[in-house]
Image 1 (tube, one colour):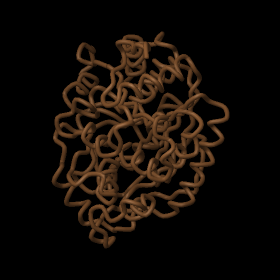
Image 2: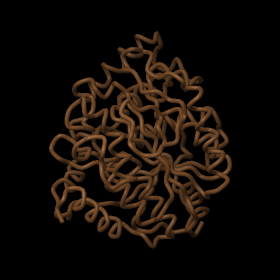
Image 3: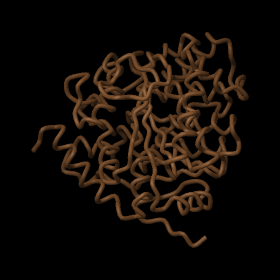
Image 4: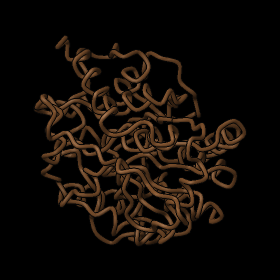
Length: 369
């Protein structure tokens, strides 16, 4: 195939499938969905850095959603930041969505702190700590609602981006990947350069033990794995992908939190392989403390990882430069929305344009203007 990727995009994994999918949706109209949810797992000290304190992690998804829709946060003071003042990746998502003018919808997968904006409801409730072994209720309903949503959206859009904001979600991702036997070790990412790998693994093993399941026991029952040790963001996004993926391409916008979604979706509907890809960031794929490439090799050799070549190293703002030092890496679909902005604009939008808009948004929310 003669289709050439622009310099703003790169591919890891199956380049042939990536180019085939992208060539079909090049310059076409997509839709972006972000499922916000809470898991009390994020309040376990040391697990999540997606908030200044463990308790504040419960506000992060709602605040991210409000930032996307309103351009400001109403559910808490300030904006969602990592310890150290590094801004939410929603700043990048918002830049990509504004430039591309892509329509977007916020889905309430199950929040303890509900955003003060219109959300699509799927009957989800917030998740319990993964160590309970009973992490998510209403999994089947959320999955079915997601599937209906996917089928509806596929009638009106040429492709769909699914994404998430769910603090603590890499821990629940690890748990579901282990329950399904997709991986046997901790390969997931973290929003900190000091990935608390042992703490996550210990926490997850407690959850699996409480649920009475071993590694790989739920290889054929991903929804049961989510019920035991997942989070409420998972079933709805899997449903969307299954509902839409037979008709239009689906971009899983995010980091290692997307891995169990892709693994589950192709288990439930193998026919979507060849029509799905991950949309992520260069930061995630160059993270030395996680290995998305290795995780993906265990899921399928026909799901490519397409990444946006964003570079914050020359940004005048230290909070953004920190992304180059191993902080954040992904979240709120920042990679997927950026990849989609390049694709939907047929390459008119590039990394430089996105970065300029990120700076505008950053200055505004940090009151630097």
